Amino acid sequence: MAQDNNGRHIAPNPHTRAGRRAEQATNHLLFRVFAVIILVAVAFCGGFVLRSQTELVASWGIPLTDAEEQALSQNAAQNSTDDSVAARVADVERILITYSMDHVDITKATYSTLDDVMKATGDPYATYYNPDLYNNYIKETSDRSYAGIGVVFADYNGRAYVADVFEGSEAEAKGVQQGDFVDAIDGEDTTAWSMTEVVNALAKDEGATVSVTWMRPSSVDAQTGEQFTTALVCKVYEEANLSTQLAGTVGVIKVRQISNNAAELVRQAVESLTAQGAVAFVLDLRDNPGGYLTQAVDIASLFIESGVVVEIQTNEGSPTTKNASGQKAITEAPMVVLVNKYTAAAAEVLTAALQDNQRAEVVGETTLGKGSVQVVRELDFGGAVRYTAAYYLSPLGQPIDGVGVVPQVGVAAGDDPTSDPQLNLAIDTVRALAPAA
Image (cartoon, rainbow, N blue to C red; front, side, top):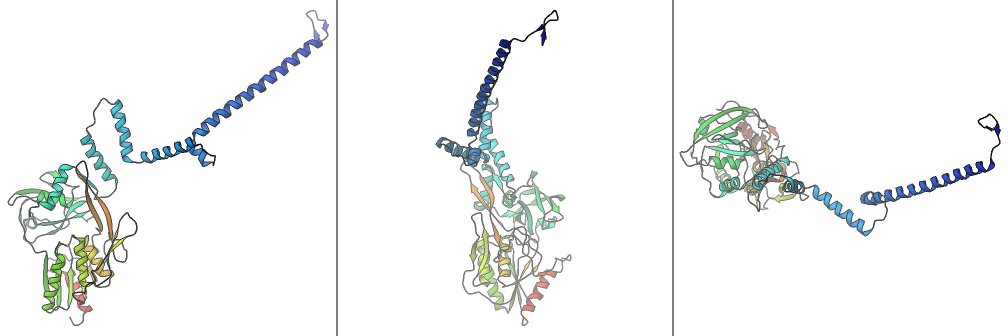
């Protein structure tokens, strides 16, 4: 019971207690109303936010309005566009145009960007040629001078290397060897140059002097090695693309390159050697850097009447095939194909075709493994790009690129320049296949 200031007890007032209870009830009602308002607001905002997440709503199976369906499609298209290099470059370009105080040199930016794009493919043969470089590139096919340094070049992993050195050439006299890479020509860095670019740079007037820096790696896959520089005088070298010899009754046909008339040269050689008494043949493709695929197919067709010669894998799906011509073979005599680690490209296709069709045994070393096709495509704004467009597969579908063709009979090259153990074994092997030889 309450007391006043003098300590006297005061009886409670029933009207006062009733007022307090009414006030409390009012406060509870106001709190509940306020809570409901807050919940409604939260639900509204949450629903608005949720509906704005169109992809999330769609994933839950909630029906979308027509406007939301259209927004979803536009968003997907935007995401797809953002995945392209062009869209990302465009974003940067818009920012620079809008905010930057500096001007972008479109030509310079194009050259450097496309160069980086080609490198980003991971394809060692992918290259962007600006208009000046491309003009030099196509010069090789239309206005090539045949004055050179006495070296046959080939491509491996996007770099030019020495596939063969002509006997008696100044390059041979200066110590240039098979497998050497070209690091510089007249002081210009050529480590990223293709075979065509190197050949063009060395195709000078007869009598001109050129300085070439070479790199001799420990193996064809090595990235570094001993460097040395030679000063070489350019001259016209004429060396037959095909040569023959008769070892008893074994005809040996050496083909340096798969040139545009190689099949006809091989036909003539087989007929001539047969007339001289050859009853078995060695097709020597050592150091052959390849050449025309059509000629490789035609050479195979001289010995294979029917069947697949090569499969070609592109990005369009299943491999396409090139078959033998179907004409009667010019000979059914036993054959051996002789190869080494520098046998490459179309020469590997020819080797695999004769091996897989069981037309010849292969002797020597595993080939280089350059089983890819490069295409050069011009660009509308000038220049061109080179890229790998296809891979060669053997008739049985085995890859050649990066693998090579493995011989049935392996033999390494000898160190004695006066003997040739690989050729000797090839002749012995084909003689065993033809006891009467």
